[in-house]
Length: 149
Image: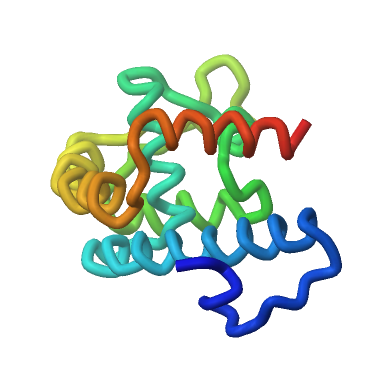
């Protein structure tokens, strides 16, 4: 559905303004679908992002600074996020052997298992809700990269 139909408005200052509104609307649209998946597993999108990052580094540990550098949303309180993931038993945390002021964080087997259980739902959103071909998705990614340059 076109953004004008979604918002019941065709008044935009410019095509660039329309594109920005469309990106923001689409981001919320995708997040609403993902939020349902996360809710079923009792985690937030930010917690999922941390788990996803840690899975990518597994079996290595990561320090909070390295995690924050690659997070999608760089604003959250990472200590609080990790405390919650630790209380859920999804990560392990220990003091860095070389720098006792730094913590090392690693996803554990329970966290890996949960991400694996979430995967079909995430893939369902990718494949069924986002009506793009692989070529369309690549073009969109290139346009979004260009937007940020």
